Image (cartoon, rainbow, N blue to C red):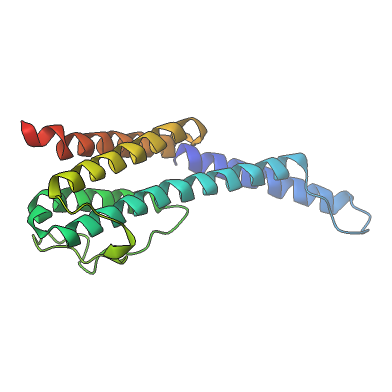
Length: 185
């Protein structure tokens, strides 16, 4: 059982025990007020859900940028498609156990086709530079911004989610390098 799973089980058990105890000792009066432990467990759950939502939203926004760049610059398809697939996997992983990410392509997740993925968002929703090099630089900047956001979220994340955020942040930094400096090597 995972650390987060144990924590959730313990919190749920404590809440159930407190509820049972309150039911046994209550005089049957008005509505029962939640205990401090129940309120804290609810606060922690809301904070984690908000963190997951922010993280998956950042990944989805990045995915939309990739889709727009691919639509605007078909010449970049061979270079961007592997990075886009990684970002789609990150969005899915970040949303598991909380916010559910939107489907990103019509292809199955295990498909290894070299065809361009079908974007879910309108490519025109994201502005893309007319010059492919500038578009790559803008994607690299977006990768850095998303990576920095995931890194900043580490302090507030539960241990398992923090490990995932750290991995996604490191991947984003590598993507930024591949989009800029890696092209020169």
